[in-house]
Amino acid sequence: MPQNLQEIPAIFHNSETGAPIERCLMCDTYLLDDKEYIIEKAMVNYPNTGTTDLIWEFAICMSCMDSVMNEYSKESHQAMNEYFMDNMNLARQYKLARENNFDVNEWLASCLITGKPKDDCSQFQLTVQCKGDKAIFDRTPFLISDEAMDAVTELLSNATIDAMNKFRDEHFPPPEDLSPLFRDRDFVLI
Image (tube, rainbow, N blue to C red; front, top):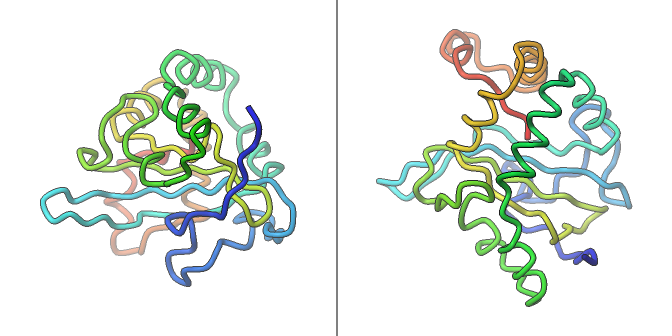
């Protein structure tokens, strides 16, 4: 499938500045010239009020993403790969790309794995792959629902969960007074 390079949708911009995220979270490399990287955001949804809150957001270059993934156990890698291969439904992404429909709201309307509508999720993660200042619309952007994140977490080894939580603690530490409340929930890096 050819890469459909489009402007990075505003939903994937820095939530504080409204501008594209410029630097890799880990190595601080400037991303907007020609680097390939991933942007991930985690959101909590309040369906009764029609609002969402950002839990965290970051951009990570492919080199740093590889180094993070290398901390995962082989069993977790295999389990995650099998889960995604068996459960991802890319038909919507491919159809939208074929139709040159780059309305990000349609790409993120429901979970890529469960089909659960975004509005029905209590939490969800958004992912897009980018090259420089453009988003690559092919397999991404996509949304992963709370149910799918829980299913992935169940497949992971303790060592992998520890690596994910270490990443969270290093880059997104909760306020000290709330820290005990956040330790019960594992961080999932898709």
